[in-house]
Image: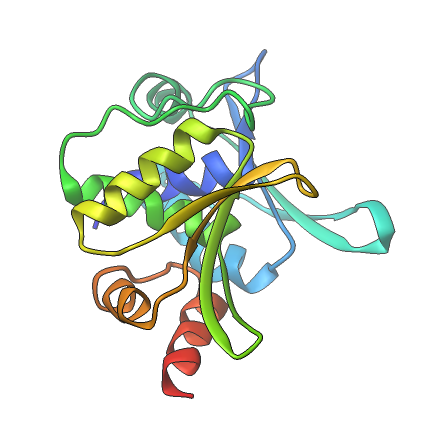
Length: 195
């Protein structure tokens, strides 16, 4: 397991890299995920334990933010993982990774941040989305290399590309090969397959 690749996936999906200072931010509404996954990842890589701060966002939903400074991760996330500084959602491209394990770990981090495990009209489904068609296509290739069938479509409502894993065999293969580093999503996946 590559803690760097997982954290890079989380930052790529649910965070950003500051333009003018060597600061990395992660924003998420799930406090447990931040406490049990993100903080330990950051601590293992930087030896720092950043604080979690509460944010008020639109529609009175609470979100939490972690901000930490790490010049070497700031550079690595840009140069190896191709995470642009500032707003990135439409322009992010695939990271420069050659090993399957590292690609999977980056995907795991992204799924932890922006993935969804659901049952829709009695059909089990897994989704990830992005405004970047390029990154969604890259994820589809990774899944295909690991024998996990998926489909891509564009949602006009969301203005985003969606990658869906809809077939039960593909979801079972996903569950065997990819552990989601998000406690609630991983538990939901187990419960989904158990129902």
